[in-house]
Length: 505
Ligand code: FUL
Image 1 (cartoon, protein in one colour):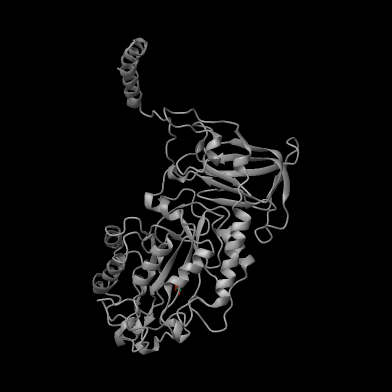
Image 2 (cartoon, protein in one colour):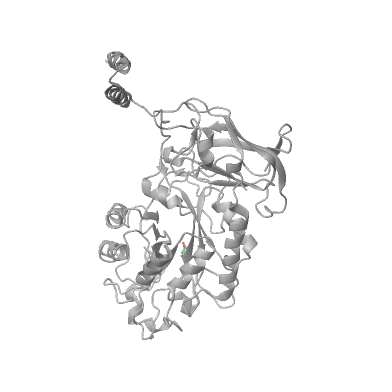
């Protein structure tokens, strides 16, 4: 049938009625199974909402609530409501403004921690801020103010709502899930359909006040929170909202120190499977479960404590390289103080961190180089897979190798030597994570090559991998190389590699 169609098309092409003939030829090509010669996906692949989420890369965590005033990290749930006593009107606009200066693209506000105290006037419990006798608390609605500020500042936003509730008398029963947890999630979804993430922590330490019944309540973490219903409840209002943790759409990176494995696969198996390893993911995992690294930006806990200090801008920059630069997102915690604002020392430290990111990772030298790939996939009707796609700043293009080819070399050459410190690689993850091993070499003259970053495990890439060429994430900026040419060799991949972008700084 196809041969006959092709024959007819050729006859038509040869005929003088060119427009009609060309159109017919195009239709025939569209009939072919893969007119664009697109590479087949390597499963699992991300859901579109996970792709958008991944692009957020770096965002803030704001732990503020009852614990800010008790000095605790985990409240018991029996705190007197009047203890929540802000000394000024809490100002989420300031929180997000500072985050923006640090180069972050969004923020997540804790609006209910394990103590069950809610920072909005919920219908599910009286244990909320507006029942405190404090002047500022009486009208406070953090989700509302936070969403409003995020929109004004063009930042992404979302909320942390603790599934474990040490105040609720119903916790541990099915009624808690239906009447409290799912309803609270639904209430929060209504604060904005464009939320990018909701944070559902898996912690359950047993003990609590539980409405006066001081006892231990443990639950079956796999089934208790009715996750399918939770997903429906949130996604029908917020279709792009990734449900972190308990929600099973993004995974904990496995530590709270701000680092991901150098080898880091986004595939993973869901649940509490023994083969799961947050830091490294699982090359053969069944689900696309990308890693998020939650880390403290200060010396104290997650909540504000008097006397705490922010981490130094250099430490924070290192953290950025070891998370965002290793195929993870970074959610950096900045605790607002008793006046409901980020203290000046935090503001200074993270603003400087933002300057370091801009200074070190924004003047891309790759677009000024000639780029050449050792192999390139044959073009389709409209799509090309050429190496120039790596520097065209277009979200939808990528360089691709032919099917069956799992190694390739990409070389950048400049007219004059450049000072180079970092290489930033991105796979085209919409079709799955592929690269398993690569290396980077530089040449001062275009002939002699030296391998760089030998102290780094150059294995996976994923959404983003930033390699400091001197091999040290701690002192990454200390020495630059004079480079006439730089070459990246992909040595092994699960299937033909697809790279979306390469930046060189
Ligand atoms: C943990 C919680 O138990 C901590 O208090 C904090 O909220 C952290 C981000 O997640 O699991």
